[in-house]
Amino acid sequence: MDIVPLYIEGINSKRPLVFAGPCSAENEEQVLATARRLAAIGIQVYRAGVWKPRTKPGGFEGMGIEGLRWLKMVKEETGMLTATEVANARHTEEALKWGVDILWLGARTTANPFAVQEIAESLTGVDIPVLVKNPVNPDLDLWIGAMERLVSCGITRIAAVHRGFSSYEKGLFRNQPQWHIPIELKRRMPELTILCDPSHIGGRPELIYPLSQQAMDLGFDGLMVESHSNPSEALSDKEQQITPETLGRILSLLVIRSTPDTSEFLSEMRREIDEIDDRILNLLSKRMSVAREIGKYKMANNIPVLQPVRYDRMVTNRLAQALGLELDGEFIKLMLEAIHEESVKQQFEIFNKGEKGEHS
Image 1 (cartoon, helix red, strand yellow):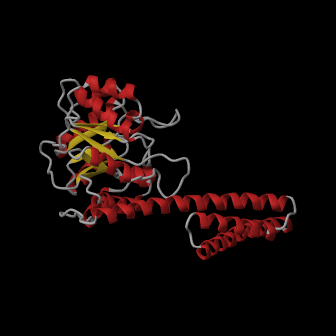
Image 2 (cartoon, helix red, strand yellow; image 1 turned 180 degrees about the vertical axis):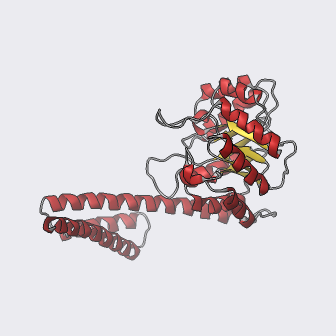
Image 3 (cartoon, one colour; image 1 turned 120 degrees about the vertical axis):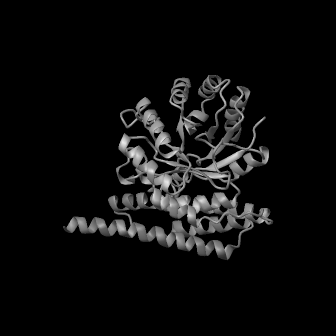
């Protein structure tokens, strides 16, 4: 693939390259107020969605062409470059008509080869940077394939945006980071510029800093962060947006390492441990949820919480299983006791609530 490191004329190439702005362009006042405050902290690229693909109809689906007019006003007033998401050829043509400087493909679009091909063909002969977010599901070949389609139509200024992957089970993150996937992408395509979208990975403001720092530690080239002048009033994704001033503080705290990590093996193993620990916590949460459902059934059917025969059988079976997995039996016994104790505790709470309800 003939992809070169992302170059954007007039933009400081110093890491991290930061794209920031609201999830959605909602009205002229919000767009310009956010832009002024972002410009004040040195942001050079203003991002905002004007077409919003929603999971269900009836929600806020963006302002369309009117939003593009506001982005043009941002560019004229602040000097920042502008970026917006496109999902089809019509979006692309309108964005170019209104002078948008950078386009990006969202996760749903990347997952649709027909849409990507349509957009790529509409950009034939146009020299514009295009950012490609990872597909919704962890499919590296699909991600690479979207970029290949753009290259086949002459687009070479391409960057990948890691925004995490959807998971049926909800845990700490809105979208699971699965860092090993963008790491493998970089191994296959060493010249590719990779940005991290901590807003969509974390889904919560307090996770933006640690995720951004982890991305910098992994050698990512930049960040795409959702920033709104008044996040609590945002019409979309208000839970994950931060004010420009908060973004400024986060950027000032980031440690940008100039020398390569000499212990890449150790870093990779630690990243794997972090992902495994996250899965363990998600499974524990799910186990306690099942235990609570069992508690409700026991209460409704007058069955005692403690079932010693069942517990002894479970411990015996798990200890035998642990030996086959090269796990220390004493450690597994302690872990099972702690899990069982917590399960019993949660079931007793259900019984206590039920008894209080009967006597109220």
